Amino acid sequence: FRRVLFRSLGPGQLVGSGGLLGCRQRETSVLVLEPAELLRLEPALVSSLPSPAEPVLRSIHACFVAARLLSLSGVRSNMFADLPSSSLAEIAMLMDLHEVPAGHYFFRHGEPSLALYFVLRGAVSLSRPSVLMGRKTLDVCTPDSSKPWFGEMSLWLREPHSADASALESCLVLELHAADLDRFTALAPGFRQVVEVGASAFAVLNHLSLQQALEQQRGL
Image 1 (cartoon, helix red, strand yellow):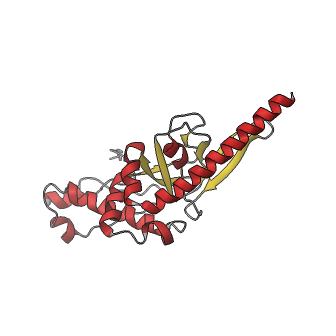
Image 2 (spheres, rainbow, N blue to C red):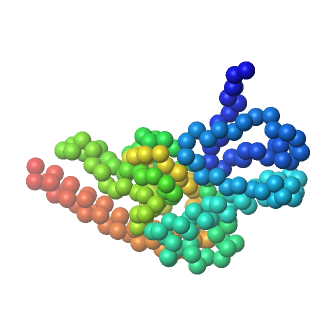
Image 3 (tube, rainbow, N blue to C red):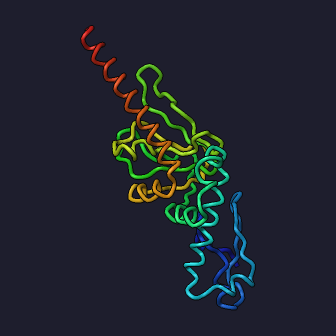
């Protein structure tokens, strides 16, 4: 006999429920290919799940995402920790969980803004092309950063991205789509306040950069 690979599982996917819910012997083996974070459900809990079980599994996903949001050191003290549990659960349901390899581009300079991201594991480089340096690194975003998210400014201003965002290593991220931004900021007013302040500073810097470029043109 030889092993046949049926499928690979990613973040947020369920394994092992078929045998438990169907009360039958397992027909496949599960092998961990690399370090992974798993949430184990005991058989007694699984057998008590209603049918269909999707609403309960979505709740489990929400609990996992909410716990990871609270673990982010840069936002733990002032954004999510004081929110009602119902608001935190709804925020978690708005987000998608993704694992990406090193070198993955979340977006590139000039592309439309479609989502913002929270980094749960790994490091993401924000950079842009530079005539003198080839490429200038603007920031590196990690779970321990004071701002462990990226992509929010272009999304908030409804402008194309002003930088490239790429994974420096394997990353686990939460993705919030543009369509859910208004609901998210309504549930998390602390995040909205931070983004509004950042947007004001961003507008000032853009204005100063434009003035400097015009002055340089006049000098020529």
